[in-house]
Length: 629
Image (cartoon, rainbow, N blue to C red; front, side):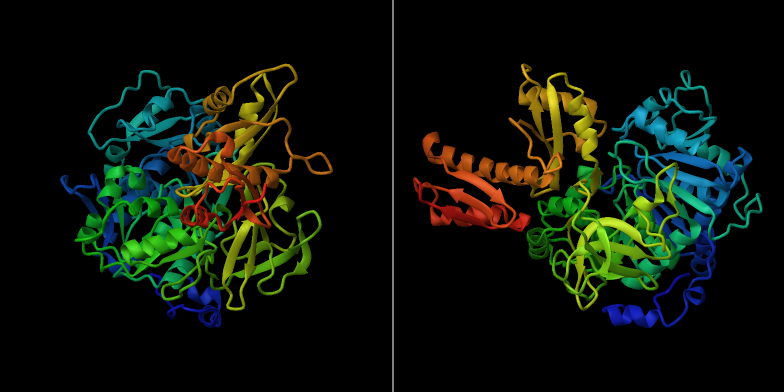
């Protein structure tokens, strides 16, 4: 099992770990060997707990490390018996459950796993499965909000075997399914659990998984993970967080996402710690949120991680009366944590939230703020041991130059690390994301402090990040462009105190055409696969801001979106006060000045101005009033 070399609090601690070669620190060659080690050294320790409900009314499932390894062997042997080899993909289409982990790690022992987002449309799922050539699919047969089983009959993919999981004991309807359908658990029960029948000797550079880089990107983009990369992510996460067999984590991340699978679970398994799955719905289950602090009191987690959206939801749940003293470390990632939310969470719960940076292209984790290090909100932590991090100055076109930035100077964030992925599956130019000497070009803008802390300042790309969901604006733009009245469109992220950003869109109409903004919003929503990517609103403009080379200038549109955010708040205030619309203040946002509120009629009091300033604090901008006409 992995054990912390030493407590990490500073960059000097990271550098001290690096005095020992990585080859001497990591002996495991595969994720399978990690489970072998944990079963050997902590066989009777609890590895995995599944909670079927959040109220504690139903019996829980618990698995020791010995039992977990046995089930991994049985699943791997089942897949081997179906003809799955080291280069074959296995699709996984399940909600949160213990079987997800059996499928993940048994699948990696037999072949290559492909976790799939159940919320995707049939068309998107078919495209992803075709891209990997998966012939075996492990799927959920019980009713769920994603309608998993109903989607299977409509898949346009060459699936030969469907292995179903049912917690209700049902035999699913297979009348419209061409593939051979069998019960995963019944087949696995017939297999030996003490060995791999394939005799496979997994090598570090063998492909372990294909992870989709985002549920709302315009086309399938699958990141290729190796066993070596996943093992390193687990080891580095143990070092940075000080994980041990005495730890326990409630992991509510979706298991088709790297955060839930690798730093959220494999790291714990590699250290002999316990992972608790909070119902099939995970943190999307409102019951889990409403009973979260009671779950903490019952299951005594020591380490916790959740996206900022979940942290915001937990602010609505009173922890008073619940014993939460077991938690020693609270971490967040996947999307920016606003200083206001960090402060409110600490006031509400007593826990300081430590930020991290993870990305699919770095096998789930890039930087971590370790326990005991009190970094400012926005600082996502220190680099991992035996990894490299640099900031490259930007050239006139916003691209990374060959010159490294000084401390506290902004530039493009780049990493070189043992967990850099092998690349994207398919014909995607490697030079768009990797330098010739192996540095990952993240597309993020940031700066390094003299203490080695990375502070993110924005994104070079135009991805909209909504509660950790990466949303490609092209998905929205393509949907809007398909409307006959639309001439041009652009989608950007608008500020939202709960989700960080929400997608909104701006359009121009064709000459002589007409459509309402609500009609266009509904049209976009009907053509965008995932609900998180559907625009909150669509605004029709006479023209879109352009650069001098004729490209749409999205920073200008983001400024308009910020202006609209405060306008809505001010207009509600004016209506409440009964102010005539002709006297309402005019609002403009500029990146260099923040919000300017033109109020020649003196409609906003000093107290109300202070309230407006609080409303936009999470954006990192101020509000100033200009009262001359």
